[in-house]
Length: 387
Image 1 (cartoon, rainbow, N blue to C red):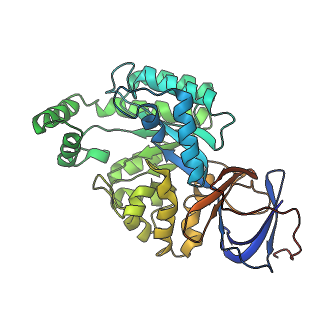
Image 2 (image 1 turned 90 degrees about the horizontal axis):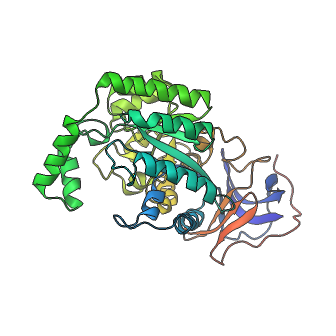
């Protein structure tokens, strides 16, 4: 099968008018094309290593639970329509959650197991990203069991205690809680209670070491989340973290980069030009050469606009910006069979029209999304192969 007369975004260059051949789900040939350009651009399928959407799909309103098959099916459709072909669904273990409710020990363990049962035969290649509260000592055994059962594909560690990390600005946290419906008095009391109940640093360090050993023993990548200080960035590198997700400050991002970690930030942040919580801008990190991976975070449709925004300032233009959501996350996560348009790689592709809309998405050569206006395929091409 051939896709012909398209602009191809390779990992190191752009072919303005080219064609590619797919056999058994793999790219087997890449050529220059002599035909009339179709106006379509073919990107490598996007890889989202951090998407929080599944929890909202399962509970779109507080205490309104949707069936797993409905939630996963809708998320699958959203991802495919955004050109995402591999997605890591973020589910969280939180120490402050009430048993049985969202992000609690019981609830999250059940979600992970149910996800694994429901993601087979879906359009997108779904993986599980366990976001683990490093202060949640009691849940480490559950993580051990999930890793042993091969139910988790990526682990990130976080600490949402107010006054540090993502919530280092307490006033911003109070304001956000008020937007959620709390009065100022209620919001301040809630934040003060969480600070008072903070877990001792010694226990947190012990938990981190245990989690790191578990990830290493099960060969699962480990990421940090919301590093805000030089000290924390060094600590995360020391315990074996390979990805620094959403660093809060430029100083922490610089240390992560110096220590060899790949830095991931949210596509909505990059698209909008700022963090919704007032933390480090993805565009500023990118300008400082401190951004390696784009993640959907909470909105997969932000991926392509974010790539376009960053391409304007990337040293390698569109090619470099595309690597942030394809080749780079594939490298960080050990996905050797995908992440770029290259011979021998899996034919995971996103076809984009002249209006920058995803019109088709291919996973292993099979169409998993189409809006009805994309490319037609052919069995043969008469053009010469690219050297």
